Amino acid sequence: MNKDVLIPSKVELALVILTGVGRAAVEVAARGLKGDIGPLNQPQNYYNLAACVLWGSYLVWRMVRTPGILREWGFRTGGFAAAFGAAILFAAVAVVPLLLYGRFMGRLPLPRTFWLVLALYPLWGLAQQFALQDMVARNLRALIPVM
Image 1 (cartoon, one colour):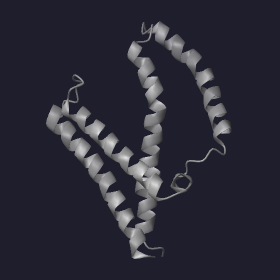
Image 2 (cartoon, rainbow, N blue to C red; image 1 turned 90 degrees about the vertical axis):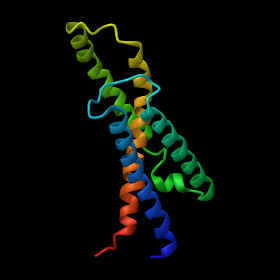
Image 3 (cartoon, rainbow, N blue to C red; image 1 turned 90 degrees about the horizontal axis):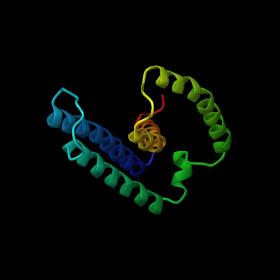
Image 4 (cartoon, rainbow, N blue to C red; image 1 turned 135 degrees about the horizontal axis):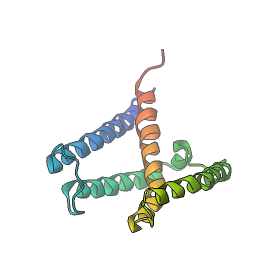
């Protein structure tokens, strides 16, 4: 394998690990081990914003420098409609018992923040899956020799 190919893999893998370790360190330093939720102007929120901006900039840079990288990373449209249809069908079936449970437990109406979380959760899930599958697993496969 070409040594030039391994350098980005090593760097990407190290940066993903450092991002996670840095997040944990900022969290413990800011809140201790209490884990309580504080106001939005907490250090960990600034860390999250900085990490998103830096990783987003890096990914845009990679897309510009490496044509076709989105396809290589697994971002394709084939099969999206079928997967989306299955997810919507599941959600439609699951929402009825969840609303009944919420009504029974006195948790309705839903808080306004619920809708924000509902809108952002698919993006968060996509980002986590991308980081794990492409930035960690793919780069580890490039670094570990085949036996």
